[in-house]
Length: 257
Ligand code: ADP
Ligand code: MG
Image (cartoon, rainbow, N blue to C red):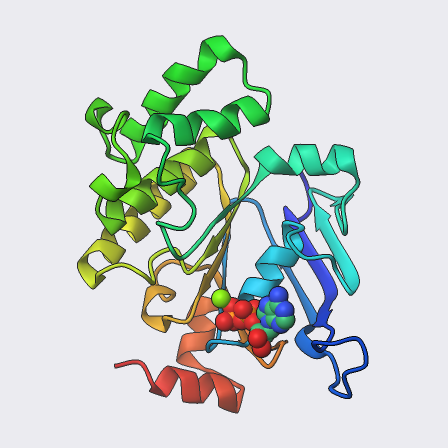
């Protein structure tokens, strides 16, 4: 495959103000964002809370309709996707959220939580059980976890399940929205290390969203700094950390302990 895996051009997502006749202007959550991510690379999207990072991810994966702009995945226009594209995207692009609990149905066993997306994306029945076991094992959870419920797992284990579930449908792009922000620092490092290992093993491309700059330095090839719905500065992570050009990037970096 030549060209970037993901290409976002002048993406805008404005939310209308509450109420039909509200005098308030629409919230410009994302207001003209452009970036590309090459195969196997990680782009970190950083910035303080409310800067529009999650909205970028949700617009890419069509939780939100795009106000304007263009999103291409492996060269194909997937902006406000048509039905067929949506079906393909369900396996090709996976989103892993911050809160490991809210994405797992409390009444489903871990096994069931992993089986559901396999069925939905058309994996043959005969392959599903093996795939569930393999993926759980790959994220460090043995067969004992198959019949456990989410409340029996720690935060880190739940996030491992979410990663296994995303991996099971064989995606090529993962949108990681603060995947470790709800976890203890010691657990964070383990999850980041797992994400690094599987990236190489499964040829994954990452959009890694975080407000925690200390996680980005060793993990991301490129970094984009968001503020008020716009990217203020982007470039190779090393360059950005060593020689930040934008005053906002400098102020963010100076806040790292
Ligand atoms: P971040 O992930 O960087 O913390 P978000 O993308 O969640 O930021 O939010 C960016 C801005 O968009 C915020 O001002 C937020 O209040 C607003 N926003 C996000 N989602 C919605 C929504 N569904 N409706 C209205 N406003 C929203
Ligand atoms: Mg967010």
